[in-house]
Amino acid sequence: MAESEWRGRFAPDLAEIETLAESARSRLPEPFASAARAVVLRVEDLADDATLDALGIEDPFELTGLYDGIPLTQKSLMDVPQQPDAIWLFRAAILDEWVARGDVALDVLVTHVFVHELAHHLGWSDADIARIDRWWE
Image 1 (cartoon, rainbow, N blue to C red):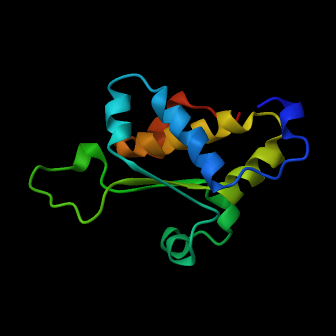
Image 2 (image 1 turned 135 degrees about the vertical axis):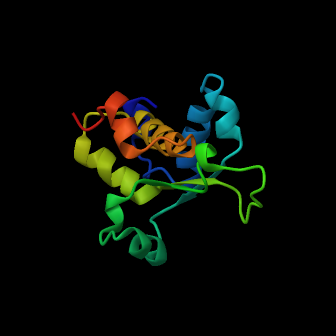
């Protein structure tokens, strides 16, 4: 979205963040696209207290996304899923990072967070992801 298109607008709502993530999902090449289609996308403003407590995170603005499920590398045909695998994106935390960075387009940031969480679904660790995605540099 061009700068002039943002004038007079409010911050993107949950649906707009979801649209950006779905756009990122639609552009993935195979075999990643197939894996991504099997994951439910959820967008909330911030992670809930139970999630933050479970992760040992005090500041909800530190968590922009979360993969909730069993990575493909750990799944068994004998497993009975209790819930679908999900990628959570946290709108307020993403917008906070976007403003703090000031050097990246919102769609690029949302794509980055979505793909990072999808990598966890594929079985990649944070260390694996960091070797190819030097995002913080």
